[in-house]
Image 1 (tube, rainbow, N blue to C red):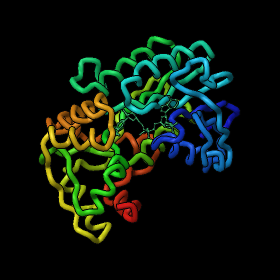
Image 2 (tube, protein in one colour):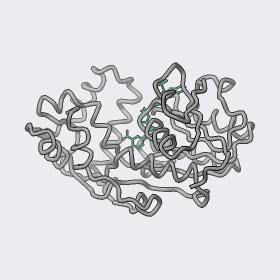
Image 3 (cartoon, rainbow, N blue to C red):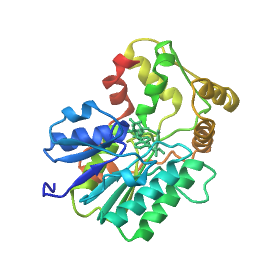
Length: 284
Ligand SMILES: NC(=O)c1ccc[n+]([C@@H]2O[C@H](COP(=O)([O-])OP(=O)(O)OC[C@H]3O[C@@H](n4cnc5c(N)ncnc54)[C@H](OP(=O)(O)O)[C@@H]3O)[C@@H](O)[C@H]2O)c1
C-alpha cells in the first residue's frame, strides 16, 4: 500500500461508501480529506481532515492540491450535473486520478436511468484524460437498513419474484476503493463488484430471520405498491422511478452474475449476506 504524501479527497464522505472508505484509510494510517457540507463525527477518525464542499457549487469544491479523488454522490436528479461539474473542476485543478463509484452494468443505452447517468459520467472521465478507476458495485446489502423497521416487524417487501442478485457488502466495496486510492496498478480499470453468491430476496429474508431470531417473511409486491410506499417515505419521484427501474433490471435476471473482483483486488473473500445479517442483526 502506498502511504506516500499523496493528497486524497473522499467525497460523499458521510454516506455509506465514503464513511467505510475513510474508516479503512484511517485504520491504515493514511491521511485523507473528507468533503462534507457540515460538521461530522468523521473528524474524530485519526488522519481525517474535514474540508467543506458542495457539489451544487463547483467553485466550493476543495480540489486544490488533490492527487486522487473518490467521487460519489447520491443518485438524485442532479447527480449527473454534479458529477460532470466535479470532473471538469478536478481536471482544471490538476487532480491525477479519479476513483468513481458507478454501478453494476452501467451503460449509456440502459433502460435504468441510474445506469445511463453513471455511464455518461464514466465517459466524461475517460475523455478528460485523467487516470481513472471505475467501481461498479451491485445492489448494496446495507440498502436494507432503510427498511429496518419493516424487517423488525417481520416483513421484507420488494417488487421482485425469484430472481437472484449478486448483492455486495459496502465494506467490501470500500476495500476495493482503498486499493484503487492508495496503490498503483488500478488506473484504467473498470471493476464490477459483487458479493460471493447470488441470492433471491427470500434468501435475504431467511438469513435475516436466522441472524435476528425472529421471523422475516419475504412478500413480493407490485411495482405500483412499492412505488407508492417509496413516495410515502418522502423519496423524490425521479429517484423512486429509478429504483423501480433497478428492480425491473434485477427481475430480468440481469444482475445475477458473481464476479471475483473483491478477492482479486483485496486478497480477501467478500462477505456473505449471512455475515452482514449477523453483523447488523441488532438493527433488524
Ligand atoms: N444503493 C445501492 O444498492 C447501489 C448499488 C450500486 C451503486 N450505487 C450508487 O452508489 C451511490 C451512492 O453511494 P452511497 O450509498 O455511499 O451514498 P449515500 O449514502 O447516499 O451518501 C451520499 C453522500 O453524498 C453527499 N452529498 C449529497 N449531496 C451533496 C452535495 N450537494 N454536496 C456535497 N455532498 C453531497 C451526502 O452528504 P450529506 O451528509 O451532506 O447529505 C452523502 O455523504 C449512487 O451513485 C448509486 O447509484 C448504489
